[in-house]
Image (cartoon, rainbow, N blue to C red):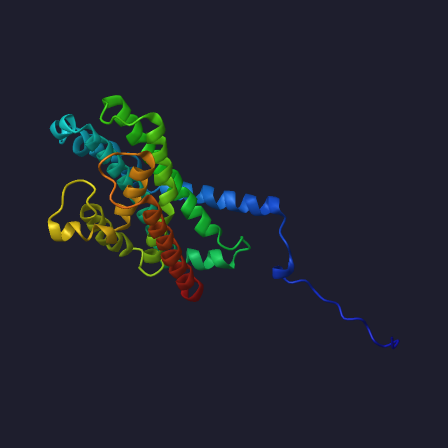
Amino acid sequence: MHPLTTPAVTTPVASDVVMPLRLVLRAYAMETRVEALRVLRTPGLSVPFLLLPVPIYLFFGTILPAGEIAKNPALGSYLFCSWCVYAAMGPAMFGAGCTLAAEREAGVFRLRRALPSPPGAWLVAKTVVSMAFTALAVISIGVTARIVGATPLSLAQMLIIGLTMVAGAPAFCALGLFVGARASGSSAPAIINVIFLPMLWLSGLFFPLPGFLEKLVVIWPAFHLNQVAIGLAGVEGFSYVPPTISAAVLVGMAVVFGGLAIRRLARHG
């Protein structure tokens, strides 16, 4: 080496630094905790998710159809599954989509991208929180159903239905994130409502539909989540689609809408 030549010194960049696994897991846990606190401190989101499912289920799922349930006890099981679907859809779609839209509009999401946090931590946090709120809502409906004796389902069957709802929540979370990635903070709730309400009532979860609408229930993800739960729990007389097909629809929905949301955020923030 020439005496006047100095060796080149390379300075590691941030992308070359490998974060220890312990710190990565801690970052994900902190992101999830902050997301849960954000939703709990927003009454417009937390109250409908945690308090409304029980009284709505009591009236529309037990009291109003009491005569029909007495004639056909399996109907009580079907309505239980249907209202669990309702409890799973709300936290996933509104909790993920509305918070993401508000973060984008306030510039928080752009700031988040500049911080040294693991990639995708926001996505994992919103999905986990949606699943946790779904679990709480479904548990409250399950406890209510056992107390009033509205369904002949066993505890094992109710557990299967509850786990199915939690596992299916990411599909609706992806749909909410897709809306939140494109809509403003003020318009996101209205847009999600325009999707949520028709899906809830036109998927055949609560009452028989006219012939031309009955044929279209297969286009609604809520119908497929209900079919997976009914098929796995063994509810007789209300299974119309094999659970594997309905599960594939939900997985495809999560991949497509989740991918579109991530692509949009990567380009425009």
